[in-house]
Image (cartoon, rainbow, N blue to C red):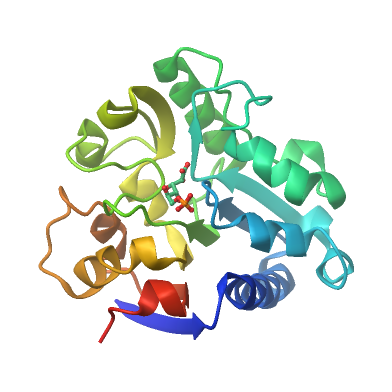
Length: 242
Ligand code: 6PG
């Protein structure tokens, strides 16, 4: 695993650095492959980056019609819910650029969880029909408990080694989520974590430098053996990293 660290002063600078990285990667991949498959992180941290991508100069800087957008996870809520990851990404960014609607792969949070997961898996299987699935760039967040996407500690989702998509019941939130699985997330050519704020300062060194305890720190499942991992951090989150 080769980790690349970018520690910026604050969330705004971190978001700008991550948006620049996204654009540079997208241009290179589109030039080489003719399309760019990106998986988006949910939660609150990526919102600033998404907002930057929805306005100049980023808004006019790339061939959006070559983008194929996946979601790393989704809460089992209607898209109108303030908790919806796709709602946040659409309002901040996707509704402001010209990515064709059929190239944005939404997870249907209103279906029964197992059905929602299966449907999403079917959609991804059709996107990658007859080819090995590769996510060109996968953005992920990190929870202060070491979860990423909706791969939460001590959940059955961590044992899923075949499926690409799974339904997860998160005890502590008493809620269902749909998540890409660790094996599918590991099909990413590049992975970029966005981690900001003092709340994440304790978990970061445990996930990156600590003992390999993936049941406790699921983000470690994604890191193991992964060649290109980029950490976009602010000073606060990185404050306990050696
Ligand atoms: C989600 C995310 C989740 C998130 C972390 C960090 O749906 O919530 O996919 O994995 O990235 O919980 O969340 P914050 O960015 O809000 O701290």
